Length: 204
Length: 284
Image 1 (spheres, rainbow over the protein chains, first blue to last red):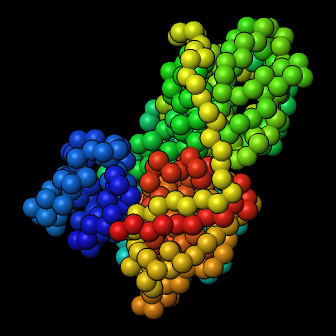
Image 2: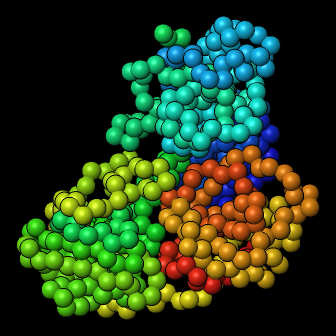
Image 3: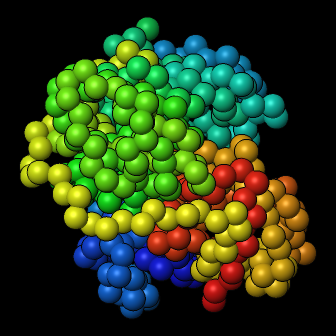
């Protein structure tokens, strides 16, 4: 673990694994004056109200803790209905050395956890992807990925909350009528928050 | 108020929506926070009431009810019936009066507060327009009607206010970290360089043109795993030319951040016109 300064009132904690990230995030959430707590793949950023003494409490808190144990899941369970008809389904199947049906079974059979968000409001990086589906990004990203696309890249799967450029491999799309991933008029605005568990349900 | 013309850019802004970075939502809010707070104080509002952030003037408003407006930021012409009544002081409008902002005499962004504040619907606790994610009200257009809140106290003209004069050369401190070790001799490189503000700059970031920052040999071809970034972060993309993240910045980034500009110096950056010379003074 390394602690890196981010201006006067924030610290970037660099960690060795997603488990450590989740453990550090849970501990830091208990400090007073937290403004933002932002996990990523190998880091957690914690920022405090200007001048807060909490910035000095980060090191003693984390060095005295065992970060090798993931915290108990405190998130909400979310089920997302998916139509598996994505343009990269056959590419993913051939890369994995299995059939298209097996890709659908693997992806919809796993339980995922929202490790962190980013890229766009409401985009969650989900861990728990079966190893066969760990695959690289496309060589050339698409200039436009449709809203609701369900995709994989590296150790993650995720759903595009709005149309945007993107290089993840597309397996399918959220079924019509599914809850939008992000709606600033809704409380909570983002359907997925770090710690939530997600399952994909085959539809249509 | 009715918008008769927005000028190059007129956006509703308050103090933003910090605290949602873990959902990918930028903080947004006025770029020159002290100027918005001052405009609101002079208009008799709470300091965080929603006003209008105007780039290079051109905003024309018609009052549909009697109200008071105050314009702050750099010294800015405020025209009422063709006469400049001045910025940094309350201007009383009757129903039907038309007020127009000229371009500021230096700097970039003027702030207009109205007694009662703009009462457009809040999104995630803020009325700010976020140009990166599209959260908040749309940029103002001719014909928009802006509802006003209820004034909490009468406007005060009592602060004796000398408008700030944005300089054409700017030096801002940078607290090194989190990723200064990705750069060869970061202190010397930062201290030696002078950049100029790119016309591509916007509310997402101030882009700097000039001598590229060089990475340490060991990091030359490395990629950083995406990580969270703060407002004021000096991110250095592959081309070596720094971008200083402003209020509508993405919440994560995949390029190393060499240092962070302290919050108190961001207002000066918000007023830096394209071409302004910028020096970054590294602090350990």
